[in-house]
Image 1: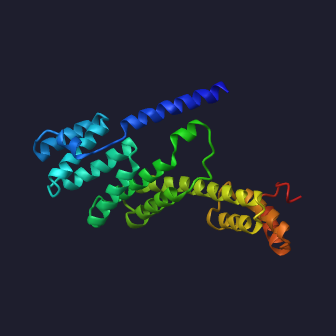
Image 2: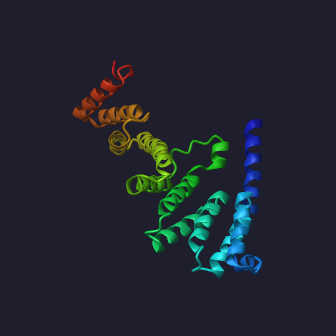
Image 3: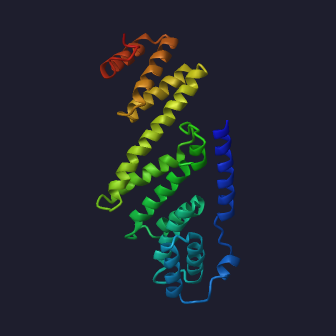
Amino acid sequence: MEKLTTKILFISLALTITGCSSSGNSEAEINKVPDKSAQSLFADARTSLDNGLYQKAIQILSAIDSRFPFGPISHQVQLDLIYAYYKVGDSAQGIALADRFLRLNPENPNSDYVYYMRALINLSTEENLFQDMAGIDRSDRDPTAAHDAFNDFKRILTQYPNSKYAADSRKRMIEIKSRLAKYELAVAKFYLEREAYASAANRGRYIIEYFTPSPEIEPALEIMIECYSKLGLDDLKKNALQVLAANYPTNPLVN
């Protein structure tokens, strides 16, 4: 009980801190930025980024973006803004700016970086710090953001295979695949507990088709076997048992 209470108190404190530091770039905030040249302001913004002062960097970069929207450094300003939004955890602003950049600059040589950052921002919404701290299983959460991140990483590998972000994108795709497989398994178990056997079996089959190999394959087969048995689908049950026996010969259902 004491450990759980400590976690809750820590989470409450963290939420308070996050709320105080949430980014806001109103016109009033932008007007606080000194009236200097774009290059001078950009140097200030870079210094803030280098020192980890991301909120200050956002304020300065937003001012540059507002005052000099078509300047020679406008693209780099937007790229740095996307990064700063990612660092402060402002996923909505980061994704919106990435979407705008890609829409207006489809041929920009830094497009691979924008796809990569958009993927990281989507992943950050999946990595719920406070639920992790509380030890909550998140496998049954909506995986939309994970799917979006996966698609952006895949785009980098297919459209920009020589990108310096390609290797990390491939690694992260493997991790996301595991996350999605866990989600599908959680949904299959949900249906099974509610005796929705056809839906549970279909989810199990989906795992077999799209997430092989993964640790979720064996429990997916077990769910399929149980569901087919409940539904009286003996041929499908037999096929699933054969697959289970071939891949997991020590599984109790095999003997």
